[in-house]
Image 1 (tube, helix red, strand yellow):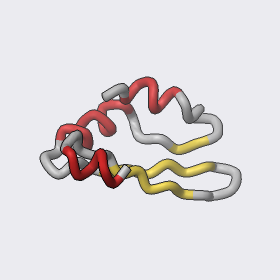
Image 2: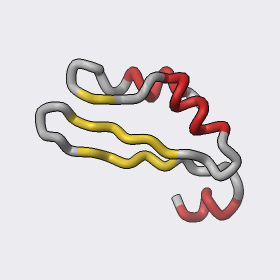
Image 3: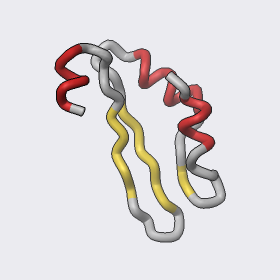
Length: 61
């Protein structure tokens, strides 16, 4: 996973994005984890769920 590249896409001045260590830990979970992104100005929240690399998750995405 490219947690650093993902986090860099959301500048901290504009978004809440968890630290890369948190993203990496969520990616290591057996069932894959999740985390939130929040846009400061609008309050818009996105729930980010990390997909496994199995055939089912490739199909779903």
